[in-house]
Image 1 (cartoon, rainbow, N blue to C red):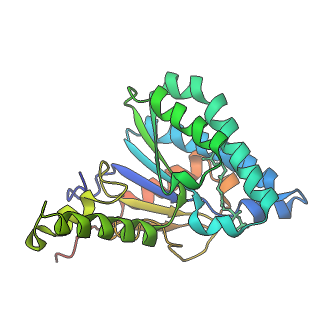
Image 2 (spheres, rainbow, N blue to C red):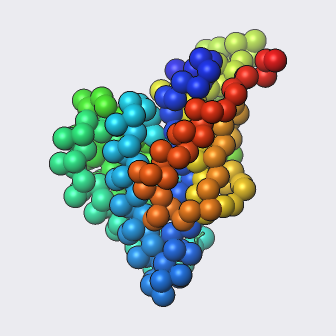
Length: 239
Ligand code: FPP
């Protein structure tokens, strides 16, 4: 699977750049980690909304390859938060039928976080209401470079020929090979950037930007984004 549905306004996959946790905390005179904690509650709320709306794929930009440059205590706090989230939300994942996936350079994650992630992926593998894809230590350029390397090695080994390399084959070598392309990209906190997120996969996605900070982005805000998406005229390059 790789390309978006070309049916106008079918909403199969929502991708989110969850931004503004730090500013949300600053406005309240709280440490940045409190913003991330409140952001984890928004993750829960948006998963619930996707299930209610029968949206089968949700990809969240939870930690970028550039986020490793943040102060050590913030990185440690985010990793512990993720670990706790994965452990404590497991009964909810089971009850709601959420299947967890992860994309990115996962080998860079601390061993405890990686273990919690692998356990959660394994334990949820038979769920099928919502595929929740966490982008962790993820960078789209790195992903494209990794895919290019894999393809070059297959060509060098004589497994495929250069003529076989097309959009479909390339998509199949990305971390997202098993998922359709996102139909809708949501970015919170008002920034107008892609920030190295799913550059290939977002080619035809509709983009929705809101000034609302991620910790305040709950079901009502999600509904607003979905309603806006429904009113867009998707042409996929046609007239
Ligand atoms: C961007 O806000 C957010 C992040 C880098 C981390 C996102 C993490 C969470 C929402 C926490 C929980 C995640 C899961 C999957 C449980 P920012 O810190 O860049 O905010 P700022 O731009 O206002 O400083």
